Image (cartoon, rainbow, N blue to C red; front, side, top):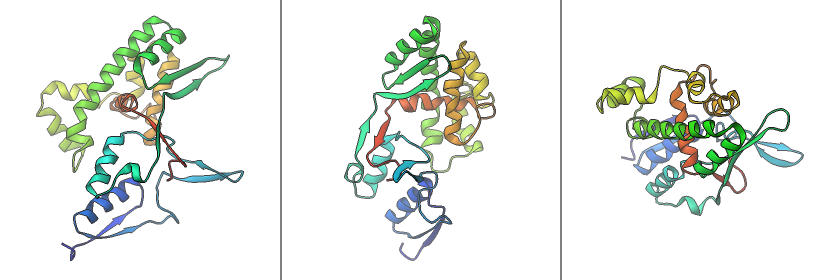
Length: 229
């Protein structure tokens, strides 16, 4: 298959993974990138002589990357040193209001209960269950699909039952859905940040993005030397 040549445009994570997967299959791959360095959103800035991540700052879905490296005959652990995080994020508002979220969902629920009351803790547990269902609904037909797209996604999800399409809430905005999940506007603001992970706004991004809550609970790591590595 070495006579088959492929050009991959863009050396972001998606482009690099596509190039790697094709090369493993025997294709002659050339990657084109207009920026001076590869990485896409994984950029690095120098601040007072020290490197700072200018894009994503944490690592999730570790098992997916381990599978990619394994198919290439390597191991993720041979290239990166990963440290699991117990505290996922710290959020602050005016007047000294502060809320930490944790890798342990129950610990997060307790923190939310102390911050916003027991009813909001109950709603958070419900939200976690919904986020898990959205992820499970989309994992095979979309997240891990070879050619994901709106039409193929709809067909694959509907094939599993009409209720499955309703589960992923594709027609409601994330902001609107969070307003139904939580009564405290601070929590609506907090979880609305998931839209920014995709470079979007919670006012226009679909409620489907609440699945990121489940992704974070499955594990978040820091990369020694920064994400740009």
